[in-house]
Every structure is written in structure tokens, then in C-alpha cells.
Image (cartoon, rainbow, N blue to C red; front, side):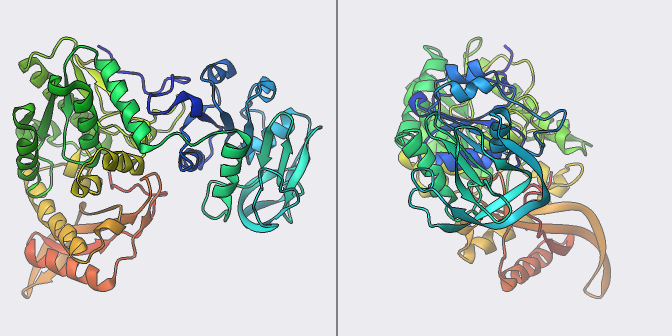
Length: 531
């Protein structure tokens, strides 16, 4: 059976989003497109991204409450600038254009769009001249975030100007009869002080959304999705002990009951004492429905000598599937069995799976790392959720805080925290160093304030002096970041005394390491993981 196509433009909405509350973001290549979806969801309105090549008929068939046109790097006058069907503006659906989306709306509807004399980038003072609806409750002057070259000098016929800045005479406009709105600035970024309220006005007052997308509704819809996808058959769930797989397991158990078996694969790439902890925890909770599989030898053999991180991820993804297929066969689940896994929206995005032209940042083992042919049907009830949304669902389902708030840990495990080939010796070194980092951060009471914190075994060895003797040891990098959803992240400003304790302990307790460095790079330009 071929795995589901993650990149299919215009795919039907997941059951995680009630269709009556669907908002679609037409993506024109903006760096903030994912953030628009996040901000819409904060108003408890389900939102998905679609590529600008998606036909209007497909969008309207999904009966969205509203459509948002994203920003983008192009000029509307460029030869290859992305366009959209002008019939959208007479379809009766409220539309909000943001930055390029506003310029495109103005251009297509015969407004006046010109290249600005100077690029407007960064903070600007927005002066509201009409506060009837989009700017209801917003101060006359407020800070906003600009990032554009072109600008709208005159709105299209039938539109009124709602706001301006010193450099943009038309910073927002509206055709209230057709419920068409545009803003030159970016309401989705935190630098726009009242951006959340402006989006809320559009969604709740103009588009008439009611905020039905609650954790309870998401959980119920996910249970229904698993029940529908599996039908009368049986399934296994890939259970790692982290929040994503645990939430997926609880959802699947509610849907399938004793027709579900949880399989935990120890691939030899987990952190110190982690396999034993997971086995002990879930054996007690699930009894015979929990099956641990010791598979370290086969994974390490498959990874032998592999340096490229993309190859690592794909090898691990395929080995996972083969182990699950073997267990499903042993349990009598194939043919026709299903594999439930905790794939999240960021996994899909970074693996290039939101639409056909998305860039592959890194192939997550459970998305881009899956083999093309497999005997199990993949079921992903969390596929359209961000991490914080999964945590909210986990709390709704009654999972303990220790699982709900566990820091994310990648499916490929420590293999992508070792730069270069993976060996048992390197894994042993990294496990001890990582244990020190986690223990000290948690002892300092910072665990809940950080998104992730871990050690990386770099591919660098350097000269040192220990006990008056020359050493030539490994360099360990410490990584700690803050984030809301993992799509962007900032490096954490850890106290200097904490960093000193971490470095001192690693060098004292891990004899193969003689140098510790701290990673002060945000995402972007880096990713959270090193590989």
C-alpha cells in the first residue's frame, strides 16, 4: 500500500477542524504564512495553509468561513509574480489580504500599486482613520510591523481607506459590501501591538466565526477520524513515551479499545535510562497491549558509516516501518492493519509536505523518511496540530503533566545530535553529557520555561590540558531554546552560573570531552536540532 500523499494540494480538511469554522490561508511564499495560521487558531478557529496554485473551486468546495491571502516576496509587477482567480472577490467569502495579499487584491481590482521610493521594513506607527469594524477597539495610533517594497497608493473602486502610516497612504482598506479587507502590515507578528485583536475582529466580527475549535472538539474529532480510518480492523500505535505519541495512543485507544496494540521500539538512540523508564511506565498502564521491541542492533547496523543527516533520517524512518510491519505480522494485523503515529504539523511543514513547492528543511522520520511502499495504512490524528495544541488536547484527555509537558525529543533520537557517523562509543559519550544538561536545567527550575535543552556531540575534536597532560577530546555543544510551537525559536539566555556548572560537570564526568560550547543561534537561520 502506498503511503498517503502529504503534499496533495486541496486535500480535504482533517477531522481535527470543524468545517463550519474553517479558514484557509492562501500561501504566496511569505516567511510568516505558518504564523498566520497559528494566530487564527489562537482564536479557536481552525485554519490551514493552501498553495496559491490551488484552484478556487477546490477552496470554495471546502466552504471556508474566510480566506486570507498571505504576504510574499514578489512584486505584483514581476513577470512571474503569483496571481489568483479574481472570481474569489465575488464569491461571497470574506477575504483579508496581508502585505502582498493586499497589494495583489488592489492590483487585480484596479487600484494603484507602485514600487515605493524606499522600502518600509520594521516598526511603524499605524494611524487608524476608520474604526468601524476591522479596527474596532484599536487606538488611533498603534505600532505595527512593515515588510514591503511595493505599496498601495490608491484603493480599488468601491474601497475605503482604514489606516495609514508615514510611508503608506493606504495601510489598510475595505470594501464592506463584499467583505474584502487588506492590510499592508503584518498583524500576525508580535511586533504589531494589536495584531491579535485586529485578526480577531476580522474572524469573529466580519467573518462570523464562533470559536468552536476547542481542545475537547479536537479530541472528539480525532477519535472519530481514527475510528473511521481503521473501521472494523485492528491497529498498532507507535508509542515513544513523548507527548505526541502518548496523545495519539490515548485517542486511538478511545476509538479502538482492545483492537489497538502499542509498540515501543528501542532503536538504541534514546537518552540515558529512557528505554527502561518507558517500558516500566507503559507496561504497568497497558499490560499485554504494550509491546516493547529491542531493535538497537539493526538500527545501528543500518546507520553504520552514514554522515549525511537526511540519509540518517530516511534510514531510521524506513527501519521503524519495517519493525512495525514485522510486529503487525506477528500479531496478525496485516494485511489491512493500520499504524497510528503522532505526526504533527511542524513535521509535515519541515518535510516539505504542506504543498508541492514547499522547501524540505529536514525530512522527519515519520513523514519524509517513510518508505514509498508499506503494508500498513498510516493514520495520523494529530497531523494538523502544533505542539502546544497537542499539549492542550493531552490535558483534555487527562494525561499526567509529566507526559504532557515533556520536552520534545526527535524520533531519530541521538543520531541527529551526533554530527557525523553514529557509533556506540559516541552514543555513550553523548548520553552522559546530555544527562548532565537535563539534570542541571531541571534542578535550576527552568525546564518548563524552555522548549528544548540538550547536548550535541559535534564533529570537532580539540586539544586540551587535563591533569597537566595533553588531551585530544570531543567538543560538546549545549543547546537550549524558547519557542511556542517549534516553527521559530530563540536561544535561551541561561544564567552564567548554570552554564558553568553544566560545563564543569560534563568535563569532570565524561572523560572523552574536554571542551563545552553554548549555541547562541536562533531559528531561523538555524534549526533547533543540529542535523
